[in-house]
Image (tube, rainbow, N blue to C red; front, side):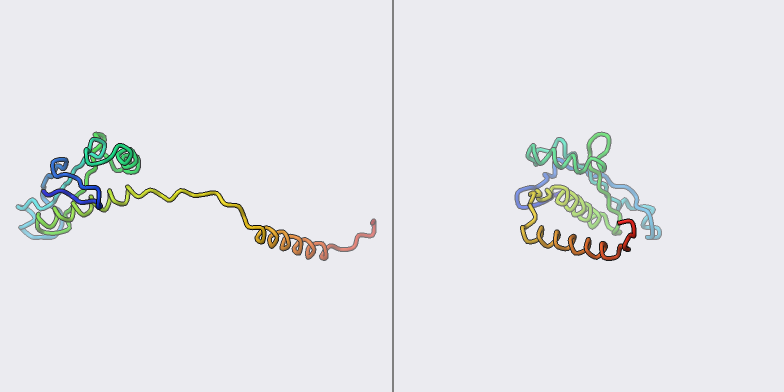
Length: 142
Protein backbone atom coordinates (compact mmCIF):
# COMPACT_ATOMS: atom_id res chain seq x y z
CA UNK A 1 0.00 0.00 0.00
CA UNK A 2 1.28 3.47 -0.86
CA UNK A 3 1.21 6.57 1.32
CA UNK A 4 -2.12 8.41 1.24
CA UNK A 5 -1.85 12.08 0.37
CA UNK A 6 -4.47 14.13 2.24
CA UNK A 7 -3.31 17.63 1.33
CA UNK A 8 -0.21 19.58 0.40
CA UNK A 9 1.28 19.24 3.89
CA UNK A 10 -0.30 16.01 5.17
CA UNK A 11 0.44 12.48 4.05
CA UNK A 12 -0.50 9.32 5.94
CA UNK A 13 2.45 6.92 5.74
CA UNK A 14 1.72 3.39 4.57
CA UNK A 15 3.36 2.02 7.73
CA UNK A 16 0.47 3.42 9.82
CA UNK A 17 -2.20 1.69 7.72
CA UNK A 18 -3.50 -1.82 8.29
CA UNK A 19 -5.13 -3.45 5.26
CA UNK A 20 -7.29 -6.57 5.51
CA UNK A 21 -9.15 -8.43 2.81
CA UNK A 22 -12.30 -10.52 2.94
CA UNK A 23 -14.95 -11.86 0.64
CA UNK A 24 -17.32 -9.24 -0.68
CA UNK A 25 -21.09 -9.50 -0.74
CA UNK A 26 -23.38 -8.98 -3.68
CA UNK A 27 -23.34 -9.96 -7.35
CA UNK A 28 -20.38 -11.58 -9.00
CA UNK A 29 -21.37 -15.19 -9.49
CA UNK A 30 -18.85 -17.82 -8.47
CA UNK A 31 -16.17 -15.13 -8.40
CA UNK A 32 -17.60 -13.58 -5.23
CA UNK A 33 -17.33 -16.90 -3.40
CA UNK A 34 -13.63 -17.42 -3.97
CA UNK A 35 -11.97 -13.99 -4.30
CA UNK A 36 -11.26 -11.73 -1.35
CA UNK A 37 -11.96 -8.40 -3.02
CA UNK A 38 -13.44 -6.50 -0.06
CA UNK A 39 -10.88 -4.14 1.49
CA UNK A 40 -10.84 -2.92 5.09
CA UNK A 41 -8.44 -0.06 5.76
CA UNK A 42 -7.60 0.83 9.40
CA UNK A 43 -5.77 3.91 10.65
CA UNK A 44 -5.25 5.16 14.20
CA UNK A 45 -5.36 8.99 14.07
CA UNK A 46 -4.76 9.27 17.82
CA UNK A 47 -1.27 7.80 17.53
CA UNK A 48 -0.35 8.98 14.05
CA UNK A 49 3.00 10.70 13.66
CA UNK A 50 1.77 12.37 10.46
CA UNK A 51 -0.43 14.82 12.39
CA UNK A 52 0.60 17.83 14.45
CA UNK A 53 -0.65 17.63 18.08
CA UNK A 54 -3.33 20.30 17.53
CA UNK A 55 -4.57 18.65 14.35
CA UNK A 56 -4.55 15.25 16.06
CA UNK A 57 -6.79 16.48 18.89
CA UNK A 58 -9.14 18.22 16.46
CA UNK A 59 -9.34 15.20 14.16
CA UNK A 60 -9.96 12.71 16.97
CA UNK A 61 -12.73 14.91 18.40
CA UNK A 62 -14.38 15.34 15.00
CA UNK A 63 -14.13 11.65 14.08
CA UNK A 64 -14.99 10.32 17.57
CA UNK A 65 -18.33 8.76 16.53
CA UNK A 66 -16.62 6.85 13.72
CA UNK A 67 -13.65 5.55 15.74
CA UNK A 68 -13.58 2.05 17.18
CA UNK A 69 -13.05 1.36 20.90
CA UNK A 70 -9.31 1.09 20.22
CA UNK A 71 -9.27 4.45 18.41
CA UNK A 72 -9.03 3.13 14.86
CA UNK A 73 -10.78 4.70 11.90
CA UNK A 74 -12.09 1.88 9.69
CA UNK A 75 -12.93 2.41 6.03
CA UNK A 76 -14.20 -0.42 3.84
CA UNK A 77 -14.77 -0.77 0.13
CA UNK A 78 -16.45 -3.53 -1.84
CA UNK A 79 -17.77 -1.40 -4.67
CA UNK A 80 -15.64 -3.01 -7.36
CA UNK A 81 -14.95 -6.62 -8.29
CA UNK A 82 -11.18 -6.31 -8.09
CA UNK A 83 -9.10 -5.98 -4.97
CA UNK A 84 -6.86 -3.30 -6.48
CA UNK A 85 -9.74 -0.97 -7.34
CA UNK A 86 -11.31 -1.49 -3.91
CA UNK A 87 -7.95 -0.74 -2.30
CA UNK A 88 -7.64 2.58 -4.13
CA UNK A 89 -11.32 3.35 -3.42
CA UNK A 90 -10.80 2.76 0.32
CA UNK A 91 -7.74 5.03 0.25
CA UNK A 92 -9.76 7.77 -1.48
CA UNK A 93 -12.57 7.38 1.07
CA UNK A 94 -10.10 7.68 3.95
CA UNK A 95 -8.47 10.75 2.40
CA UNK A 96 -11.85 12.44 1.82
CA UNK A 97 -12.99 11.65 5.36
CA UNK A 98 -9.83 13.04 6.96
CA UNK A 99 -9.77 16.06 4.63
CA UNK A 100 -13.37 16.95 5.54
CA UNK A 101 -12.76 16.43 9.27
CA UNK A 102 -9.69 18.68 9.29
CA UNK A 103 -11.63 21.68 7.95
CA UNK A 104 -12.05 24.15 10.76
CA UNK A 105 -15.13 26.39 10.64
CA UNK A 106 -14.50 30.08 10.17
CA UNK A 107 -14.59 31.92 13.48
CA UNK A 108 -17.62 34.18 13.78
CA UNK A 109 -16.92 37.78 14.63
CA UNK A 110 -19.67 39.57 16.48
CA UNK A 111 -20.96 42.59 14.57
CA UNK A 112 -23.32 45.40 15.42
CA UNK A 113 -26.28 46.45 13.30
CA UNK A 114 -25.70 49.58 11.24
CA UNK A 115 -27.25 52.85 12.30
CA UNK A 116 -29.45 52.82 9.20
CA UNK A 117 -30.80 49.31 9.85
CA UNK A 118 -31.63 50.24 13.47
CA UNK A 119 -33.42 53.40 12.25
CA UNK A 120 -35.40 51.44 9.61
CA UNK A 121 -36.39 48.76 12.13
CA UNK A 122 -37.63 51.36 14.67
CA UNK A 123 -39.50 53.27 11.95
CA UNK A 124 -41.23 50.04 10.82
CA UNK A 125 -42.20 49.28 14.42
CA UNK A 126 -43.58 52.80 14.85
CA UNK A 127 -45.66 52.52 11.67
CA UNK A 128 -46.98 49.12 12.69
CA UNK A 129 -47.95 50.52 16.09
CA UNK A 130 -49.81 53.38 14.44
CA UNK A 131 -51.72 50.92 12.24
CA UNK A 132 -52.76 48.92 15.28
CA UNK A 133 -53.66 52.05 17.22
CA UNK A 134 -55.88 53.24 14.35
CA UNK A 135 -57.82 49.96 14.50
CA UNK A 136 -58.83 50.45 18.10
CA UNK A 137 -62.42 51.43 18.59
CA UNK A 138 -63.25 54.63 20.41
CA UNK A 139 -64.12 53.79 24.00
CA UNK A 140 -67.02 55.82 25.50
CA UNK A 141 -65.42 55.73 28.99
CA UNK A 142 -62.50 57.89 27.92
